[in-house]
Figure: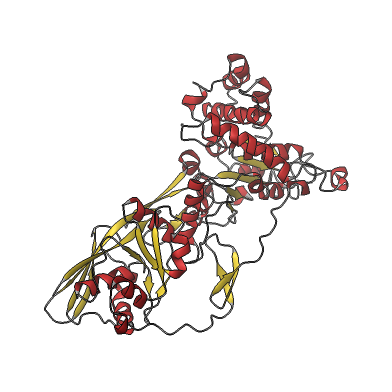
Length: 528
């Protein structure tokens, strides 16, 4: 009979690889086999595709049909191969002309309808990088696929439309009947925000206003630390009794951050395309994400996991945004310590027997903790019921190597009655502080242009001790702190990073002694 080839994409993490979907029709008894390391979802496609082709007016060949997904050593998962398989089978039978290097990415229903799939954005990005510009997807995925520069996207509602566009005789084709009204219900967009599904159309409520920093009463140190963290991309630890405002401060950090640039927005949107509901991504995510997992979250929930090829976890969903761990000592010790890898290299590597997935995870970590289990040992601690050993063991769950990677460590004291009576709205608003943060970020972008870095938090030792090293008199306090043993080599670098951010906020070209003193101050406010 015949042989034909179409193209699809296999995703392992965010990395996509081109897959040749080869179809061969033999002269033996009827059979339909799919080889090339398919998972259960791909293997189950056989009966689904036969029904979809028949109901579209162009049944598959009754002869032996063999489909090979090349490279055969790469795991193939999910239903996005459906359209590529059926198109290669029909081309092998001579029912449809060849489609060249066109990439097909869609799931098929029994009636031939094209259904959206997750991960379209990273799949189309991989196809364009490999030189495949023409992409065919479900109409529900078309807007997401169009986000990729250089892609020529065609969105169709059913297999019959795809076949007609490929050159089949429209008179031979059958289109599925229009779907009835979709019951009202909850839906999720690619970023996981709530939306209402009515009549097949997702409508979203007006976005809630971001919480304003002016709502926080008092906490001068906390507000300044938040501004420094936003300006330089620094990690932050806040320790204080319940009700002091730690969570309020953390929730206001994303509002201080600037919008994501194109490449960062593409990365963030691709991650949420893998995790969100299929067909819900219609625009790039421009605002930095905010993830706040519960303290009972497992390692898999925080870093990614699942059977076969793992999906991204909260750390990757917070990429280019904020990961907030409230009640940090309540997290499992192993979960907390696993943060050290992404804090250093900005990515999560998850190894499984089927494959290894790599997800970006360059986030700002914000930790909030009570000083002890009862939370009352701060200040006078007169009402604390915890023994010294219990307090030591509780806060000791945050290991020294982890805390050494946190640039800003502050105590958030109880708010006095006078500060509370003065009311909210007395301090600077988020918008006012965000303007200073934007100016500081612009200064960093100019200084770090050409180095592949975005913020002071990413500065390495070669720069801090080389081209960006402040004068010796400015760094003298750091030398004394290291000689006393109160500052590690890593801590020395992180203090210098914060000092550069303070200089950027003040519009100075280089840190001065006050900047270094302030940076040291913000590493010494948490009791040992």
